[in-house]
Length: 308
Image (cartoon, rainbow, N blue to C red):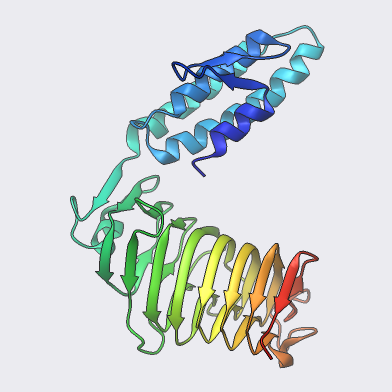
């Protein structure tokens, strides 16, 4: 997510001055590209919270599109830029970053103390925690990629994270639990998991398990799953998307029951006994919705390599 600003910059035709690091306009429409160069420089500053940067990037992307349309009509679209910045002010003012262990000794206590829009940032180290309930729209992330390692317990039905909100979990190593991340008891919201290494789960690395309906969705990207009984699974869920994943040394890579959509692409499955559990193909049994299915859609860029 941190590379989103440079991506926008390159698509907008921007460049950076090598000696001072200040953006400069390049190519046509210099007034607009210059403006977005300075915005890109602004959001790259470390003192701005991560989530604020995300909202700024999304907003400016919309404004850029609006600006192109207005330029065709001979207009500039300055009012749209100003309006977007006004909308962003509450986010910058009220969201905060909670550090573990500086502000709270445990991840669970930091998440419990957070409010919608906050960031829980975890320093490098080894943490022994279980059933961290994420029931707010927050970001829970390791300060440094894979620097925070969380050990759970292998007791049945316990997870390291339990997701019940439109949250994001990123950058952790999750080790030794029954499930790594479970969405259960949640409203029908979509959460995001990215940049995760999940190891040694007796159950499922990431599972979407609604209690009685097709609720709960997730977008998973840049995930490595190793030595788990199941890689990613559903048991009554809405929509699941998995991209850029490596699933290896598992009994089953993907298992689904009674979900609306389960798509896998740009991924590698290596040395798993089963890619998709044999008895789950076709329509769902006892489905809550007519369009529910047990099938897992494997995209064209999924590669299967097994030792046997």
